[in-house]
Structure formats: structure tokens, C-alpha cells
Amino acid sequence: MSLEVLRVIENVALAALLITIMYTDWRFLRIPNSFTYPAMLIGVVFGAIEGLPGELFTHGLVDHVAALILAFAISYPFYAAGGLKAGDAKLLMAIGALRGINFLLFAAVYGALIGGVLAVGFILRRKLARPAAGAAPNTLAGIMKSSIPYGVALGIGGLLALALEATGYVHVTV
Image (cartoon, rainbow, N blue to C red; front, top):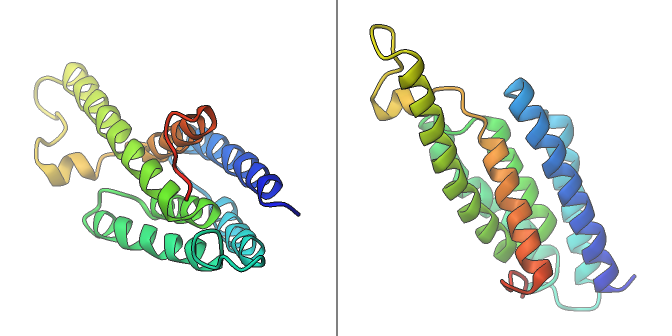
């Protein structure tokens, strides 16, 4: 199997995962493990297949596993602070496992920026809906612990990274 064919399969799998997760997180505020764990496993297997010609880091198992670990390292502090739920962190890990470090970094930055805009929108909506007593807390902890579907933002960030890569606007692969 050529690297190009494998990349197409990875992209289709990632797009399907992101679209499905965006729906479930928006609708149910939940990202099921039954989506993220298989995606991580598939990503690591794809990384091993990519590494068979001998490029173990740039297009291989090491890159995919390192991206999975880096995604955990990036997301854990936010999870520990209450800013991300476990499903959001596992989604980042799945993105890293499927596409590697460079793609993960682009998708994470895009997702964080979109998540910030989404959070501001949710906060403004809450403030307009409840301007008096009982309004949402104005502290960072209160804002972070509110139910904002960050999986949607991370999904849009991943799809944006895929689209920019496909158009050649941004070169996210090594």
C-alpha cells in the first residue's frame, strides 16, 4: 500500500471521526470512548504501516505514538484544571495518533482558537439570558467548568487543518 493511499484512508477516517464526535459532543456533551480508543489504535497501526519503508520518525510509528503522547501532555493540564473533559483530551490523542505531530499541532492550535471563540459565545449567551442573580460565575474556574462542547471546536480545528492541507495552503505533513 502506497503512502498516498494510506494518507487518504487516514484523512477519511479522521474526517468521519471528527464529524461524528462534533455531533455527539454538541448534542449530548459527551465524546464516547468507543470512538476515541479505536481511532488511537488505528492511528498507531497506520503509523506502523507508514514506517515499513524505513522512515520510522517522519512517516512512521514513532511519529504517531509521539503525537499521541504529546496530545496527552498538552491536554492533561487543561483536564486537571477542569477546562477539558476526558473525551476532549482523548480526541486530541486520537487526532495525534491518526496523523502525527505536525498535524496535531496545527489542529490543536486551530481548535484552541475556535474553542476560545465558542467559549466567548457561550458566556455572552449566558450573560444575556441571566443578567441578574444566578448568572454564570465570572471566575476562570467557573467559566472553564461550564458545559461547553470543546469537541466541536477541536473537530472544526481538525477539519480546518485537513482542508488547508488538501488545498496546499498549509503544509502540515513532513
